[in-house]
Amino acid sequence: MKTAVKNFLRRVLALPPVARLLARPLIDRYLRGAGPKKLHLGGGGLHGWLNSDLFPSHWRIARLDATQPFPLPAAGFERVFAEHMIEHIPLAGARRMLAESHRVLRPGGHIRLATPDLARVVGLYAAKDTARLDYLRWALAHNRLPTDIPADALVINSLFHDHGHQFLFDEPSLTTLLLAAGFTNVRRHPPGESDVPDLRNLEMHHYAIGHTANNFETLVLQADKPAVPA
Image 1 (cartoon, rainbow, N blue to C red):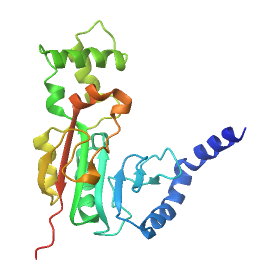
Image 2: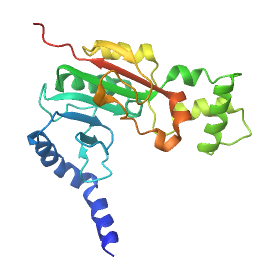
Image 3: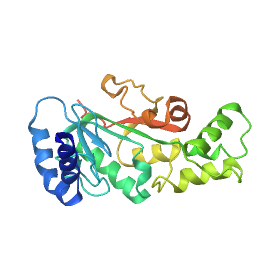
């Protein structure tokens, strides 16, 4: 009974009107806390981070629309992270998200983005190699797609149109947006790996789709906000 009550309260507290009311107190409490400030866009579950989402699944996740000005102070954060989130907003929204991420980062801070790799998606067409064929077979089963149409056409269309996806990036296009927002030193890392220690092992998408599929489909880029010149 207690568990049922707790689950009911969690669902109520996560409802959009309640989440909007709770967002400001959650953000203020986090900003008053000790330790480095880190912003997680589009999810929860990261200890020591301000976890945020447009539709929070838990009352401890602050409601934040990443396509609008962030209700956060300039230069107040050391890290920004988003995993399999930027592909869910339109291109114009992605530009605003990166501009706001740059604004809230301190000089010398870092941003890390994980998202489906458009180059890998397009490369599935007429695939012949083992890695791509294995991914196609996995995607058909995982997404319960029909089998009466060639797998490459089905899986590519699913990655473009299903799951709430709105715009898929490859490395050059996402790099271009990061540079336009003012970031520098854009580099690619495998999921879970980073040259910045506290940005390692952040990705959690493999819990949903497995390491093999996640490593195949996911593009991870990291970039810096330039430090203040000496």
